[in-house]
Amino acid sequence: MKRNVIFMSLLAIGFLLNACYYDKEELLYGKGTTTCDTTAVTYAGTIAPMMSANCNSCHSGSAASGGVITSTYTSLKVIASNGSLVHSVNWDNGFSSMPKGGSKLPTCDLAKIKKWVNLGAPNN
Image 1 (cartoon, rainbow, N blue to C red):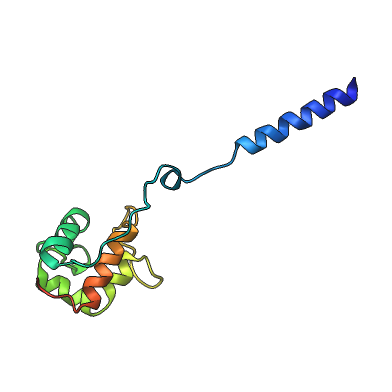
Image 2: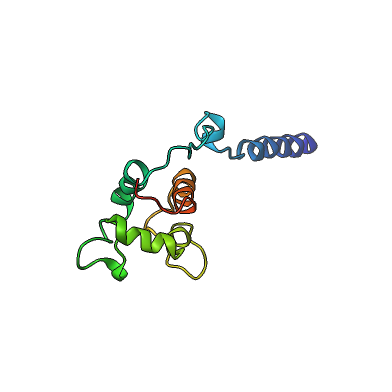
């Protein structure tokens, strides 16, 4: 009888441990399986709206955080050209992780920024 109780207890523990398996929701339900389209990345249509949604609240106007302005093409081109834009949004060591105090941008957004920078950060 004691063996049966021990065996049943071990069996129940085995089932419970198996039930604690964690899956990624995006893989289970198809979220995140779409590809990132970087073929039509433009400043006006892609980058400027992204900066407006994630950066400009702190990085615009005369009191821009760190003196970095992301709300104008001219200022953004400077940080795109010197590499600090890509390194900051990628949260690379030696650079201030942006957005500060927020979550890292989605992988697709990072790919679009990198593509735009690699194209020479055109004003298109």
